[in-house]
Image 1 (cartoon, helix red, strand yellow):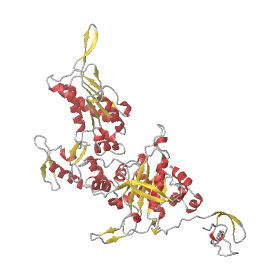
Image 2 (cartoon, rainbow, N blue to C red):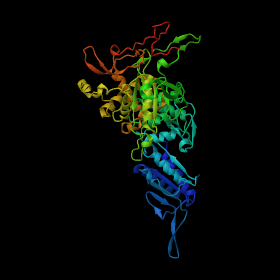
Image 3 (cartoon, helix red, strand yellow):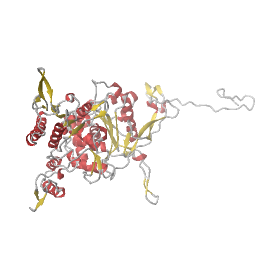
Amino acid sequence: MKARGVGFSEINAAICACIYNCFRESNCMITAQLKNYLDKSLDKAWNALSFTNDNTSGGMFKLTQVHNTQYYKKSSWYKKENGQDIETGWKSQIVGIVADTDAKIRGDRVDLLVYEEAGSNTALRKSYIKGKALIYIGGKKFGIRMCGGTGGDRGIALADLADMYNDPESFDVLPFYHNYTPSGDWIETAYFIPSYIGAVTEYGEDADGVKRRLLDERGYCFWENYKEQLDYDRSKIKNPKALIEHCAEYCYTADEAFALEGENKFNKVLLTEQLMRIRVLKQAPKFDYGVLKFKYESGKQHTSENVRGVTWQSTAKGPGTIKILEHPLWECQPKKDESGMIIWNPPDKQANLYVAGCDGIDLGKQDTSEYTKDPSDFCLVIYKRQFGLSDPQIVAIYKDRPQDIREAHETAVKLAMYYNCLINIEASRISLVGYCRDRGWLNYLMKRPSMCFSDVTRKHRAGLQYGVPATVANIDHHTDLTRDFINDYSQGIWFEEFLVEATKYSDEEKRKFDIIAATGMALMGNEELGSLVPKTVAPVEVRHQDIGYYTDDRGIKRFGVIPDKYAVKLKITPPTKTYGYGRQTNPRYRDY
């Protein structure tokens, strides 16, 4: 990853020319997704070959008689043997391929495979994986792959390069240990070239018009001076959006280079600062990972009607686990000062303190085929509303795509029980509604929010509809709410997954951003609750009630739950003993 103007294409061209001239029968391949990107890179490579041909007194001259086109040059020529044209010569070659799809990464084994403008390649990940076959034989590696991208590239296409940069080990990339970070701390990523180590002019000028030396006679850059020059250029830009774009092009860190990864309305400056606190400064609080288990009424079957709550069980981080920043306040332990005195006691169980947002799926892994693949996961976000002096905050996230979709639905209901909240869902994924209806848990789902209706009367006529329709207006609204939440409370967002998705988010690829969609549903649920303030929940005594026919005060026979005043009270005569003639014992009891 690099800043603008570093000269990555020139470096690639020089390496290709070196291999072509110095290694017999070598093979270099330069690829790019767009033809104009490839043409520019190949022009630099051909210029490098022409220079060595013309300026080495014939020492590196290579005749290209067999293949000499705009996209293919091979150092070979024909000689006649027994009347036949036989190819002979050095036989090294450079090939250019417009790889607009990953299927075009094919051909003979190569010594060097270059991915030009990788940050603009929407098929980079697949192309990179396909390219592995070109540099390995029988598991033995003999060639190398080089990918390069420029800060300032835009959109979702930059996501693959960002993943490769941040996790070099997983992609078989040579790691680079450096301190090109906002805090100056040392990290290990793929290779990064900041803007301030590549000056192209000998002198620069500061705000006072004082000249300073940027390059010596050998071309070495005095980077401290050049960085001051770049800082001065940045200080002249007053528009925040323009400043982000400028910093992405002439980046000091990879965070700046990837700032335009997603085209969205979220404040990337705040998001990047919070990511720095988590990744570099290690300021994030400790998370709890685990699962929730149902509690059943004692002595009853383990069925939905006998569920009496849930319990938390901490586990190791893994698939299907829930990530919790803060447990429900009533589940927290009292806080004590240094002397051991209690300074805070957990409140009683609250209603309307939390609200959940869900981005659902209708198929689990076991039901997914090649023709029904969906990149999204089931995601549920728990959002704590404004309470006292504490800011609203995301307190729990569950994200998974289990084999059986009912596992995800069950976990969603468990979280709603645990936090005593309602779940706002998206109307395009309503299998959760059917699951809750079958088990009598519809009371944990929020009805369709009022903002989805043009007038209140339509909402009343809608009856039992659930879910927010995925219309353009609704998506714009919940991303607006998410934008405001980030602007106001970014300092309290400690879920790195949310911050990464918010940085990369784009409306065109919204299906890939499950946490953003679930957070939007939670914020719309919070909006629907409006002025409702959290209140203590009165304990409910669970007791058996008879169901059947009864006659009310007006003599009308009815069927249903029998009210207490109509229930037949069975009066049992206590057992008696016989003490003399004529006194009998109640025959329904045995007298021991």
